[in-house]
Amino acid sequence: MLDVQKIIEDVTQVYGKSRTALMPILQAVVKERNYLEDKEMIAVAKALDLSPAEVFGTASFYTFLDTVPRGKYCIRVCKTISCHMAGKDEIIKALEDTLRIKVGETTVDKQFTLMTANCLGWCHKGPVMLINDEVYPELTPQRAIEIVNGYRRENAG
Image 1 (cartoon, rainbow, N blue to C red):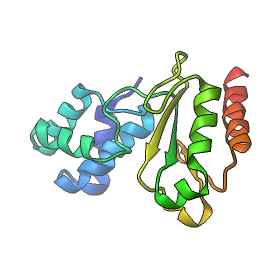
Image 2: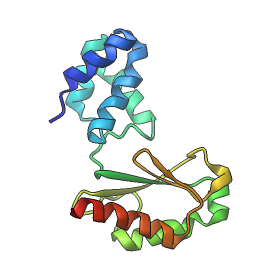
Image 3: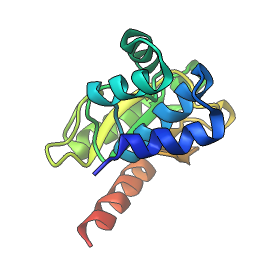
Image 4: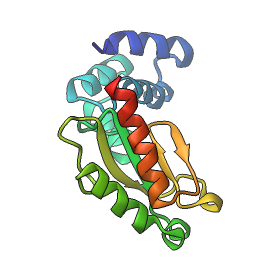
C-alpha cells in the first residue's frame, strides 16, 4: 500500500517544503504506483502549501505523470519523425496485436498499458520503446513482441 505521507517526508528532507519538491514528490508517487490519485495530489498540495489545482496542473502537463490508472508496465513508443521513418507504426501494430489493445488502453489483466510519447531522446537508435524505466532501442516488430513476452513470463512465475 502506498504511503504518500512517507514519500512526502522523504522527498521534503532533500528538497524542503518549497515548490521545488513538487516534481520529485510526484515522480516518487508515480514510481511507486504508476499514477497519481486525486487524494494523493491533495496531500501533496497541503504539504507544500500549494493549491490542488496547481498540483493537478503540473501532473497533467507532463506525459510521464499519469493521473489515471495504468498497467504494471507502461509501454511508451516514441512517435517522433525519426522513429516514424524507422518503422514505429509497425512496432505499434505488433504490440497492439500481441497485447490485444490499442494505444491508450490497458490490458484486462492490468499488466500493460500502451502509449506513445513525443520523444524518448533516442532518435539515433529508433524505433524506440520505453517500458517503465527500461529503454529498448533499434526495435523490430518481432523484437518488440519478444520483449513484451519476456515481461509476461516474468509475471507468470
